[in-house]
Image 1: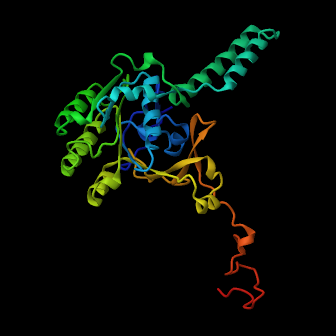
Image 2: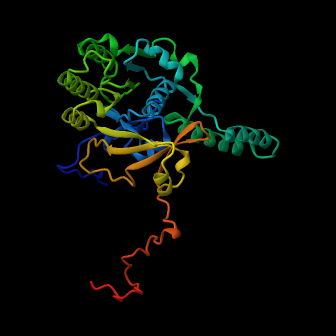
Image 3: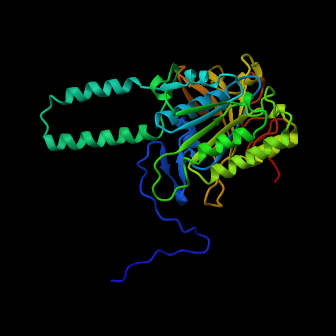
Length: 364
């Protein structure tokens, strides 16, 4: 028999099928793309797998609340758990002190119950071969889930051995009178992770906090900041790294803010929720448990021209048991009957219904 040939067209990119990733923290997607976990399982699902390797991720901060730090912490912790080098830059004098606030992995109580059940199963009279087969399958599923993305306990700090040594390189943006020095540091860090050539061994993460902070000397040099972001994006695109950058758009001019947003491959925005907003509380269910709102403004597209269609663009940020971050779609509460109107029974009437005050049916 003649061997079957794979049909290709001029619209399909010739990419060799890569084997399943053996590197912790990386996952292969469609069209030869590789994903790197954000550290939040819900966010990975929303984005279709996580952050694309070689992409620039930007978070628009809310100056009223530091909720963007939650995403930054989990992004850095996920990299350290997977033994991925991290470059962290912050507009503070001692950025290494921030590493003590990174969360550790969350171990649910279900794991302890499963361990007890495994010990009880030892007393069962089951064939040894069958028992070994089941145990191996369960272990692979558990390891497969933990290898890519973890839940993090925001109450407990990360283990010290994960932040020791050369795993994290910290840079103070206050020491950068201009961005040329930081560009050289970023270029040296990115050069450790050349582009995927069939044998990827590791990936790097760059975390930049409050890039356009007013306390930085380059704050009034807007075109210099744009030039740095362009060069950072080009360097990241040709490497196995992901750059995660937060900036306050309200402190920049409208034109520069829009240019920064345009340069982002993945663009998210954070909005704080007031503690006591009665109008918002009547519209949203579970308002008391919300910390803020996360909006997906742009999703990166690599090796494809098909747009990403999301189920929703705005999600509520909640803390499950005050420990781990959870993202949920916004649910609008039904209108109270005492207000005189509700969905489907508003003053304008509905299709197929009759009005008591006249008119009868709707005329299409």
